[in-house]
Length: 245
Image (cartoon, rainbow, N blue to C red; front, side, top):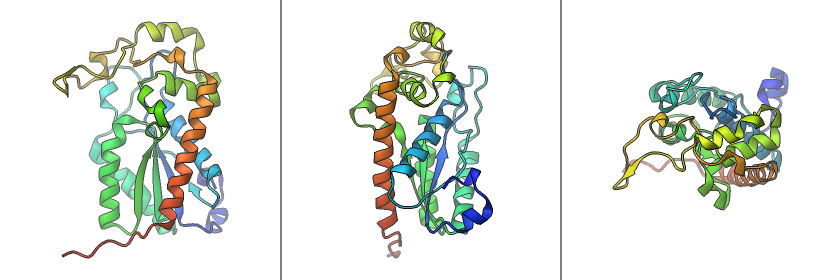
């Protein structure tokens, strides 16, 4: 059940303790892909995962602004501090738990959110009356995960599959030409760069032309299957906490 489209009485009738909370970012994705790419992909994976799951699950509205200051040089990028982001996620989960949906999977579409999501999920589990676990879709698509860039083949493929009208196809070549091959500037296993503008001319990492709609369909299916499996595990998990020694 999608909360955003439902009435409160429909929500009240939901017989489940499971919820999905999509989390993304509003940030540059090169000259060819929309600023909302990370939100759109998180929402698509959440909906597909809910459909693949054999039980009932509530899908909450997406959190659209995340930890994205690394893209601040590119116009339109929005960001909040990690503290603000963690507080927003935690309080949103608390409101879901208030209605009985106290087992929550945080369906993430933005790499910059990963650390903060793991930290806040730990806080929720240890201190609140809820259980939360983060799930980042591009880490759950098998060998394709190694191809993840930024506005590159995986994200472009996903958009070409479920929202082709949002991809500026006439700019793919320009996106490719201004892209970097990898994320960051690495020396001795340390990344010297903090902002994406330090190593990519137009914000793109990877070749967006390599991601077609067929790949996007496969990615969405793989992510949905992984998410459905996670929901099974979360639903059956003993979430009581070990006693302090």
